[in-house]
Length: 342
Image 1 (cartoon, helix red, strand yellow):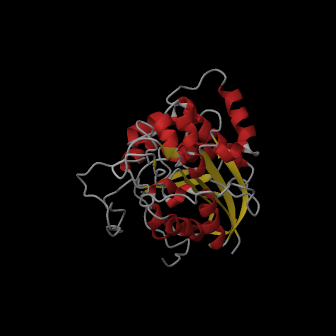
Image 2 (cartoon, rainbow, N blue to C red):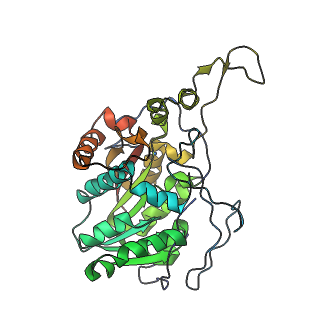
Image 3 (cartoon, rainbow, N blue to C red):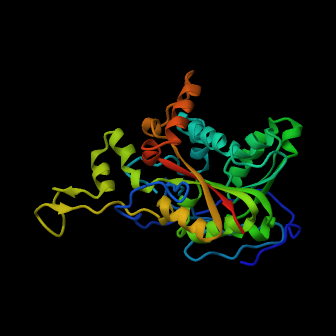
């Protein structure tokens, strides 16, 4: 994909996100301190029919289902374990304690790394616009590039309730993040990609685009699953069969191959769920890792529990854990923050 100058921008229309597949994470690889901070990522593939944006028609991608086929948003690591399976579920998830913890921790981390407002921020796969609205309130100019029109409709609803000073700082573009260079141009002060990498079959193409979109010296922020620690939620929820499968431990259940003890394979996870792999791809594309944070160390197993009156204390506890070892290494999600070096 050839870089486009910042001025070479298509007329934005409205809404679109990004999709996945699965491969096991590097087994036996411990999450140790990376060059500066090396991180780890939850949910099965998202498939999108091509969407027309202005005069740009994305080419169909191999393997995507037809328009009439169901979309599934999540890699499920056990029965009923997906956080969300469609746009409505995702919106509901953002209102739960787990959703609030995720969004507030991401915001808190980024405040320490972003250039001061006003700066130009691009949110790839921005969902229902939680981060876009938050940073627009803080004086940033934010463009959301999202493939799902239903998600963009939710963002518009949120914008409708915001002050005009916030609304004018947010621009919505419908399109696949992998096409973003052609849709919105390059030279962004910071590029976000939160909760998207788990939906792409191979992370490198999207991660390379994130770097290409960002100006030299700009910030790249990626949130994904922490593959090596996915068994923790299942264990804390008492889903022991799922826990054993995720750990790849011996099972004494009979298999079709043998009537004796056998080993059940670990659940196959997408390569984007290996945080060391994500960090390595970003670094190879021309970035410097600045920091990495764990998200949801203590609250990930709480399902759809709503935030309570102690939500601020919960977020403070999660923030403290997500910024230090050993807690951040067992969090559900990993937040990578890199700077483009060239």
